[in-house]
Length: 338
Ligand code: AQP
Image (cartoon, rainbow, N blue to C red; front, side, top):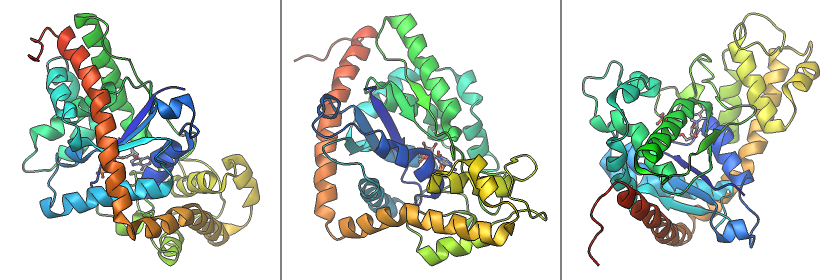
């Protein structure tokens, strides 16, 4: 099996885009328990709290958000005997490797990142960390000899940069890093905001009605989907340019019900938006129900999450140190005296 790594920021509550574009795929792609790939820990997932520090945040909430996110990932189905789960700041090598890679990444390429432009636009003060975010992400990935990074479509440019950095480092210092590739969902790789379907659904953007949270109660999910922006027509047709709202709902329906978009178009021919939206709401509610149930059970036993994160940090640390030793040696740094 390919070594898989991916992360998620504790920057807000997990939404349907995070779940369909990334988390559910992490769960599906875990190796079977007891297999060689599971014993090698070939599925690695991380709550990337250092990334979440790059924009203004409330320090008193960071630790609880981190724990809640780890709980949600476990509830989604990341199982202890199938994948490694840890918190980024518990493994110091992430920050160390970022510094080394900072000397390989260029200002020009970081300056071209669209996520930086979007997140820094209109802000009075922008942290250097936000500018350097893609290099930290490259370090996350390269530290674990990652082959594949399952992410949402919004992360494509960052994955390309991580590849470029790995290739450049290997070229300059000798073969050190595995060159990773991104993998993307076939449907719902970029779930859009229900109220503004030309903008992606987001944790940190203020759009409560446009964002479906994985832990939203069923009634609220139904209400949000029923008030989703569509258009003045009546036909349920996939046409992202002309019908972005309906097309987004079709993608959500396809991803949550397992019905291909082309079949869904036939299923709802002549049905009108009301009936269609009800079916989308039902499919989403059923899709997140098991996660919600397991989350409630795990919340009642926080010790289980703590134990998982402790073991995850130890295992990730050991793996990361091997790659760090290789990278520092290649870069010509004096080996640490023993
Ligand atoms: N709307 C989306 N559709 C599909 N996938 C998405 N992802 C994010 N938004 C969507 C994917 O979820 C994973 C974790 O995201 P992240 O924590 O790295 O944050 P992000 O990509 O910057 O987007 P968010 O969730 O909206 O957070 P904020 O608002 O803090 O930026 C990633 O694989 C991402 O692609």
